[in-house]
Length: 246
Image (cartoon, rainbow, N blue to C red; front, side, top):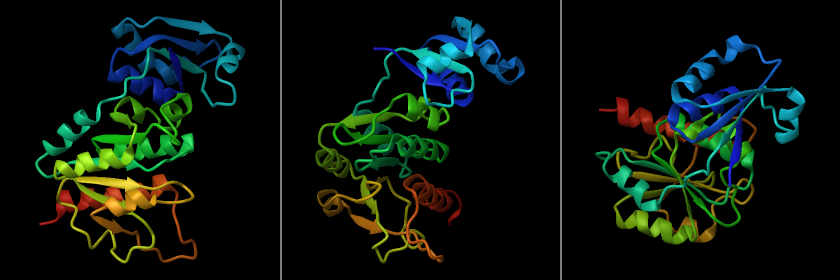
């Protein structure tokens, strides 16, 4: 089954990544200079381009800010868990995976993917049930990040975490209840960061499998952060420690 990706960033990054685009549809009213890079890439890769009335694009991408450009893609390819683990443990102590413990909102998942890809996360692990999956909205909100970040879907998240642990990947959960600050924890090891559900946080069985639970210290009146913002804060500290700490 084919699917669509819309928006300038998402289409451009998908084009850069590989050859999964079947064709690109552009609104006739679209200003060409803003998408010239896309046109050049499409020509280079032999991807057909069609110009249609904006109403046509509105009809196939309703309620989505498509920016007048849509790409028709082949099936999205999910990776195997083993592929992600292999990449992580071959990173000389700098393996970094993200485990999304039943993130249900597609907008949140897209933003999470964008953040993870920006900080060089090597893969995302999603459960198949009770979780958002990769779709048009996720592609759009990830601003093309979904074209670069390897994603796997697992039947049993608990067993996937066990497999990570068998390969000496540290399972680190994030929760505001922890007394261990992300700035105190030593991130210079292979890590799988577990981010919990938007409302319930980490599931009990997942929390119990974590080697450590860390929190982000806050100083204002708001006591929590959006999951993608929180993950960005943590990833930033991980990168800082690994790149700049003695």
